[in-house]
Image (cartoon, rainbow over all chains, first blue to last red; front, side, top):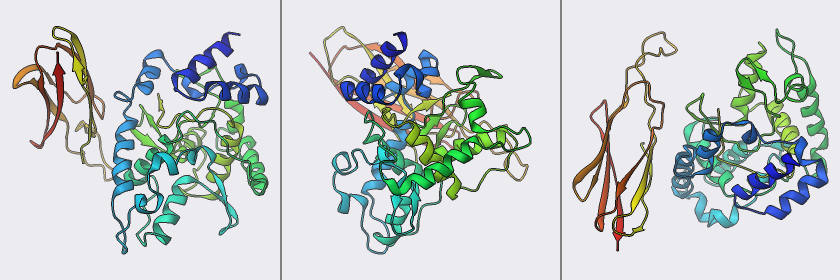
Length: 264
Length: 106
């Protein structure tokens, strides 16, 4: 019961779709079993995330809005010229990524999708992955879905890729020979050295990590964990990360998106 | 590109204590870290913050290398009259970033 109440308070805190989230969460698994990383944080870090004037991720959102409106490429066209008002056209978009991208026959994450649009429709050079502009723009797009339930994985064509992501999640790797599941499924809520182990629901990416003193994507976070178990991380943009993200986002389906979140 | 987010209530009653929040995007490079080439990355921090209310200083702070990137400051003042609250951050390169907000006091 305590877990349920906490979830209600959390959802209300995000200012959205209270009833919807509760019913979705109940349909999937008891809410007490799935927790956002937000719930594992100190009250101070939670307060930092919840106030838009203290959440440093909002700096990237503001920059992203400028990128959204900036003319780019040979055609001198901005995102806004085609997509219009982001609060309408981008509402719910980040909550369903990664999506199936028919042109490549694979799932694609939001950052790569932005770059496809930039290349084909703006005739501009794609942004470097994990660069400031791309993080800013994806934070701005992500924020348009804040509070909305995650809907990733509804397309059946994604299933084989999601299954591959799950295999990666459960596969032991690195010199320490740990899988993601060893910590995040079997030992969540306990500590790894001084750090709390969360359940690895990627509900707030891109997010501001205090340790990074900056914004980062889920891929950056996955690289951190891989380095942690002494495995060699995949390069940014690799298919493995997209499959892992697809699996994790599908696993977090129904939980509210928190972008831009704050994490320790 | 520095970008700041400030929060000043648009309206207040005379005598009210108001909270002001100022968040700025800045790397706050300590000068103690080394880059990929092994050489020290030169120090680049915001070392001074000043807030004025209709020209009069109401809050200022000296900042040091132990302060994290994207410094966030929050403080209070008494709403005395309508006017402009101005914010100024100065970094090691002597660059100043300015922001202003208007407040209406009834």
